[in-house]
Length: 134
Image (cartoon, rainbow, N blue to C red; front, side):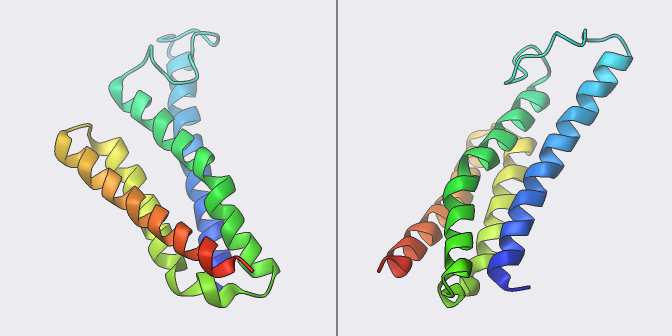
């Protein structure tokens, strides 16, 4: 598997891990009677601060997947993996770091570090887009 396809699989898997964690915690809350089955808001605003951050971290992945994943897929499908392969692992690492920082804290330092991880992804994506453009 190419680095680009591995990064795409990693991105999708990471998104799935965050979703699974959120649904596991929600299931526990329902089974323990802490929250009724119909008592969840999409952004978890009626739950703990961690659950709110988890919802946003997952949403960030879902929002980014069409752009970032699309570039990885486009490069692979057009035989231009040489454009995305060299930075694919860096991109995936920055995505995971961004999410972990999001889950950990909303302190100014954590938010700045989280933005830095996102900026790495954005910079890589812009570079890829320019290199892939005919």
